[in-house]
Image 1 (tube, rainbow, N blue to C red):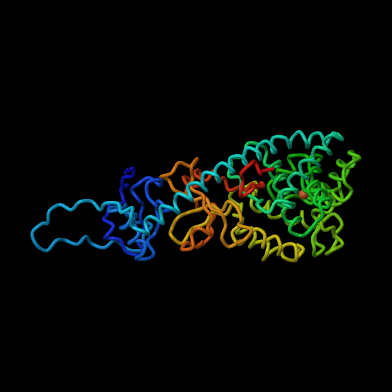
Image 2: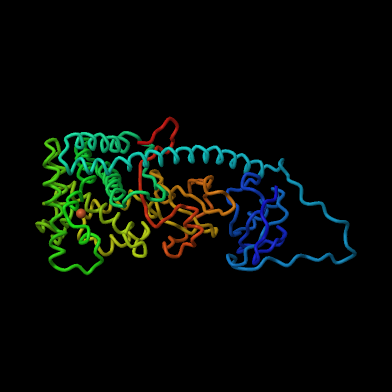
Length: 437
Ligand SMILES: [Fe+2]
């Protein structure tokens, strides 16, 4: 079933004209050919041979993404031969058979992944919707809010503690609520991931989650005009903002059951390892471990999700920035563990693959952080059915580079639901049976 036509700059060419360096789109639907990609840059003669063996006689040549032009079409030297039949599919070819077998397995896996991701997004949306009420109740001193928050963070922590198949997954969704609630949930999920990797006990993790969820609750006592004011702030405004950790402790102290260690983490979440933080300029391990964890993930999330989208970094850039510019301010062991846990290309990083395809990192492969789980940009596949795959399944493909948010074409951002923001939740990667929190 041919579904594609060439655009103005693109041209239909014969498969025999291909050579390494030519970027092509296949003319068939993704489900009708045995290859994982609908579009790719030809790297090896073996790829051309596979296309030929799969009965693909024509492809679409994309000049702007190619390193070279296709070969000229060979002209017959004598009288024209009788019209050639189009190359017939050769399903009996063992290579093509194997490609089809792999493709079918990938389609099954893809359906399962898409279903898991949908469940995870529903779960995330349900959770995020409950957070504004939880914050309000906490501010008003409700004991119920403390209990509900404990249940929430314990559920998330349990996924990281007990389920080897759980991974932190990017939620590629358009935000519908105030970003402060997304930030609170992000910081909680990231902190719990890091806390679990650092070997915290279940009770320590619960306290860490509580501290992370309410780390900025003290900002509710500060005028929004000051909170939202673009820099530079006056000294008085800065001093006012620096009060929010103390205000936070005052608020949570109204709930008798609020864990003491979580309150301490709220008080210290802006202290820095080098003593340059606030409110008490504490240093190194004088700062509680829970606060040192929250300080790392809070910085990471703030860099990725800057209120000004033009300043927001992609997660790869954020980690590089933290490692180079903020290294002294953060606990060195914990920040190294954080970077190792998120992989070289953390979830939410748009990347260019070695075959010229743009992809979005969706989650880290815990067994192989260099080979994350990707969503592929393919304008010929509806975004609701976007192809997602483990890089482990693509031994011939590598990540060439991360892409800056501002360099992503709008149609790619739209395809990925990518707003330059990275929200995270926990997903069970094997998935069957509602493994999400
Ligand atoms: Fe804060």
